[in-house]
Structure formats: C-alpha cells, structure tokens
Image 1 (cartoon, rainbow, N blue to C red):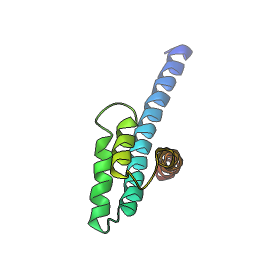
Image 2 (cartoon, one colour):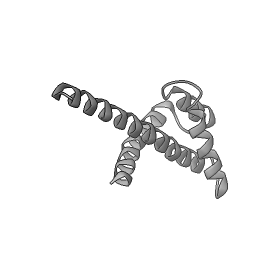
Image 3 (cartoon, rainbow, N blue to C red):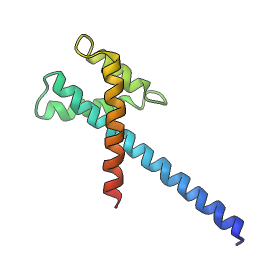
Image 4 (cartoon, helix red, strand yellow):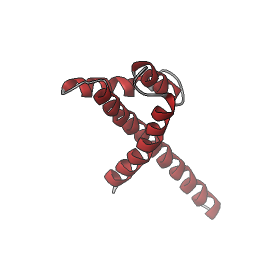
Amino acid sequence: MTTFDDREHAHEAKFALDADLRFKAEARRNRLLGEWAAELLGKTGDGIKIYAQAVVASDFAEPGEEDVFRKLAGDLEGQVDATTIRAKMAELMGEARRQVIDEGR
C-alpha cells in the first residue's frame, strides 16, 4: 500500500465513524425530545417511554429532521411554539452528541 492508499482508507474510516456518531446522536436527541414533549403533554411512567419511541420512529418518515419537528409541532400545538421546539431540538442535539461521545470512551 502506498501512503495515498493509507490516507484514503483513514479518510473513509473517519467518514464512516462520523456518520455512525451522527446517526446515534440524532436518535438520542429524538428520544430526549420525546421525553421532554411527553412531560409537557402530561404523560407519566411508561407513557413517556412509549411517546419518546414514537418520536424516534417519526424520524424515519423522510430524510432530515422536519418529520420530527412536524410531529412535535402537531402534538404540542397550543402549548409550545415552533421557535421553542426548534431551540429545544438544537439544545438537545448538543446534549445527545455529548452523551454519545461519552459512551464511546
């Protein structure tokens, strides 16, 4: 192998690792969002877990995070505005990244 091949393989491995971390962080963020929204909706116990799973599942409707946003906006209509939901999504994405990275150590 040449140095160029080594660098190419290293770049491919980093890309794959970054994609895996991004997927895990997005799923974690969606679970955290679901737990946050479930509490706002007055859910308790298993209801929180079930709702959080529904939020995670909503992310598979289409690429990107708009499907998750639409679910939350619809469920929280009249309780929380769009700006608050988007801010919470951004806040919890940072928290989810930290959690996933910490777990990987």
